[in-house]
Structure formats: structure tokens, C-alpha cells
Image 1 (cartoon, rainbow, N blue to C red):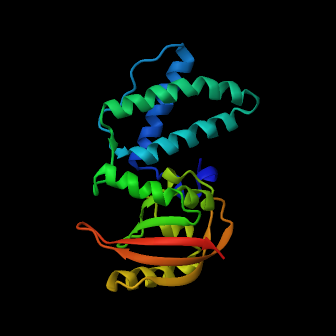
Image 2: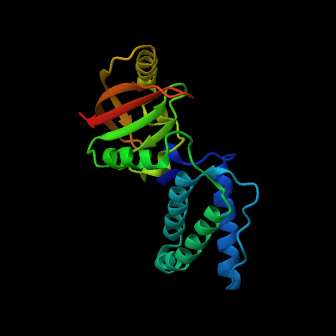
Length: 216
């Protein structure tokens, strides 16, 4: 998964990693014994959308490691993934981000999702990705939801990170949109020159930096 997800791979102590560990135990028991107990989900607290994307990546990685048995394993994992996701939702384990009402967010994001350029909503204080559109995931070689909560600067070459912080600080301090040219790198580390625009969006709990990136 580390090679598949790059910087978006969950850290060893993260809530998402614990969800994946419990799914692995749940799936291994089901495949070994031919029957499934209820998944053990007590105490979990993870981002629902990111967790769903990571579960898909885990299943794809497992099928790849299985080699010639990969297709059969993928077929056996599919109903287990569906049951595990259902249990996550029913137990309220998933955590949805606070903010605008869901109906309003859906309307706004539905429009952004149709934009061809990569869109990122970043927490201006720590550069973590709060939201993104499918084009952002495609640009970085990942599922969009796998980006949620990830440090956006982990997809920026180290030599460019200081310039990104300068742009983030500037957009927080002023309301004027800014434009700059920089470079991103996808999950495999391939550099992608981009032209970016960045705009401040004020919220009660934290300012957001809305970044649109277009391959240069």
C-alpha cells in the first residue's frame, strides 16, 4: 500500500490504519473458516470517506500480492468489504467533517467535481487537505477520498515547500486571490509542473485556502 498510495498511505498510529488492521483480521477469519462474525469496531474513530478509499486500496494491494490467485481473492473480498462498510456506517464509526449542511455541501461539491482542473481545499494553518475533487485525485494518481486529511505539502517537492507556505500565509493575511507557478509530485514521485491560483475562504473554526492547479 505504501508504494500504491505514496504520501497518502496512513501512518502506523492513525485511526485509518486501525480500521485496516481490523478489516484484515475480519477478512482473514472469514476466508479461513468460511463464516463471518460481526466485525470488531469498538473504539474506532476515522474519516468515513478516506477509510472507504483506503479499504479499496487495501483490497487491490492484496489481490496484487496474491498473483495468479488475485482475481479469485478479489471476488471473495468484495462481499466482505461490503459487509464491513455497512457495519462501519451502522455503528457510527465514520466521522464526517463539520461545517456547512450536507445538502449545501453536496450542491457546491457537485459543481466542483465537474471542474477539469485539480481543486484542493486546504486548512490554511497546517496545509492538510480538507476536500478535493476527482481531478485532484487523477492528477496525483489516487482516489480523491484517499487525499482527505493528508498533508498537501507531502505532494510538493521539498525545494518548493517554502514557497507554498509563503502563498498560504499571504492568502490568509489578505483577501486577494494569488497566482503562482510551482511543482507537485504524484503518488509515485513523478514531478508535475503546475500553474496554481489560491483564494482565501473564511470559516468560523479555521480559514481555508482554495487551490486550483492546472498542469503547466
